[in-house]
Length: 133
Picture (tube, rainbow, N blue to C red):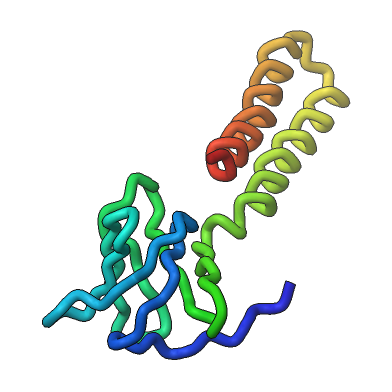
């Protein structure tokens, strides 16, 4: 998917709510913020006026949207796109290490196998926690 061109946000214009609750974002007087008339969320316009950030959020990550002229597109966090490569790295390094341990003359392999299984499950749980809703 190619990134869509973002447009500057006009503080005197109404926009649809990015929370998808059919609300309308209306300018809040004397501030650089927009408020939804349906879900009562407040969104602050950033300094460049190309994105809005949700103020009162229940999510651990900052919620940021950009206006494309027709709809809001979520500005993704940088670390979230790195989960898959990091997970593969965390799986690959212990796997190679375990292969080297298996080819050596180590008698006690059970703790190493348990350690590897825990390291494989950890990234899977992190990815699941990151992408669930």
